[in-house]
Image 1 (cartoon, rainbow, N blue to C red):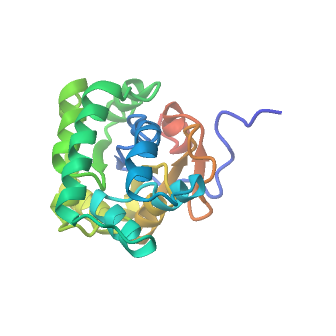
Image 2: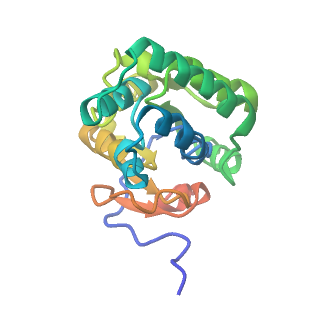
Image 3: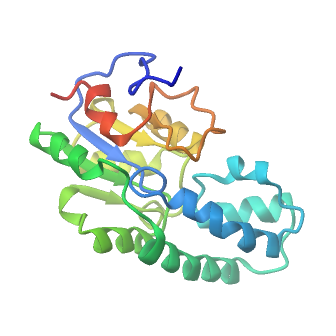
Length: 229
């Protein structure tokens, strides 16, 4: 039998005042697009790259990805060169390839109409987030947008991006919820003290979401999972 639209939560959500979304793989299908594009990008740099390594790098910032690859495989190029090429690839992905998650705008509208706030906590650089916000006209929805640049590179699974987003929204983490699509993202949200929904987006079946409070199969399930009327 197929899974229910909203899997039973492991625990009920508290009264939520704000919902903080990850961007990549949650708001847009960029994790899938990165995976498709990175096959050539990574194999060029790491001939021994294996498909199962994707689950280890999903959710990492570009700088953290470089660190992982350099430590695990050894890279011949500098960090600056690697990040420059990541940036060029990002322009193609965010400006031309990604699409919005099904039901995202309807979910935003439902959350906002209930009097709750919206934020973003992403491990991507600010200019990558800006590409998405500008292309799809999303900026007005959010009371806080936190990027890797805003937390001095202390990206997920560290809690800094979520702590910063909650602070900018004016709420303590205990009354905020996160929507994530990666193990490192879930850990970041839980390390910060948020209630966390893990989104099975069709491209992350290998991710370990055991630390999440509940799983959802669509962003349209966010209001119900958080008991937002």
